[in-house]
Image 1 (cartoon, rainbow, N blue to C red):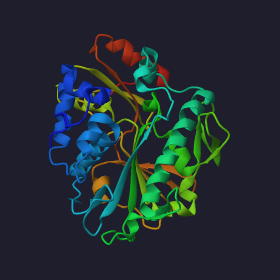
Image 2: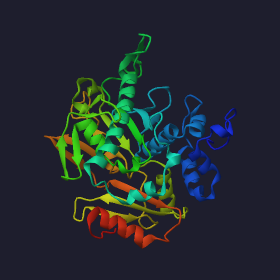
Image 3: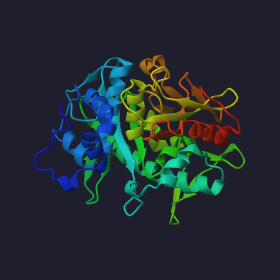
Image 4: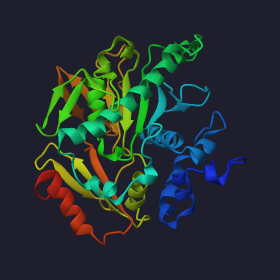
Length: 372
């Protein structure tokens, strides 16, 4: 499948900036090759994914990535049906609906990202106010995205009061198999700093305080710029029982492509990942290289719904060390060996400031040095 040849009818001024970077910039040669590998056998059910990729980018990019993930873990997809987005076959099959959270209308666009925004990826969130500014906006955007896809599964009344049947009423969909929402975050220019905090709050009601360095149970947050209350702990809502799990990532962007490309020695960028480790010091600085590569599944999480009607239990994910998160007795459990990516920093200047960048990240996150 060719997604880089211009689609008929797509005007140059309507091309997404990230698409143009991948298509035109020699710097992204390796990244482009990775995308081409992801879409090699991608099935375009609606004959519109290439146009979506060129004009809107993120939603198609996320589907391409998920397709690569399902190939990597070894599940079998069927292309017989046009909904949900991914139908996994077999007795342990499941259904996946993909969605992205994007910047709200009128929000600060990614084109306005500054050097400070870029450098701040090396710095942890230190105050409750800074945390709230970032995470509360993410919570609102993610809540909307998940709700939209839940409606697609269960059915809903549209604005004209007409009932729109859900996927669960399709003949090929069994309510005895898990329904999973796969969500990628692009909800603000600094979405790379979200980590898993927004999802822990939204899904389980576990809201982190960087000043107190602990999680607190919280029922709602106020919508930024408004007065509406946004529910937290939505996995405890009766309606959410139809959602078995949420697959989530906030690191699937051009930086992911640069890191994967760097891992096979194509991309010239200098890439470091700040990873969380239960062993002290808790934040390890991972300098990406051919000897220390980033894996396709790094930065991908599965959040299990403890109250789901049908549990999501896919051994292919477990066997491939996809990081799974669940709640047991009020405690957050993280299982499997893949250490999560808390932040990623990519520099097009290569390793010219290597020592400064790595020591800054190590000292800011730990107060000491910790390299891979």
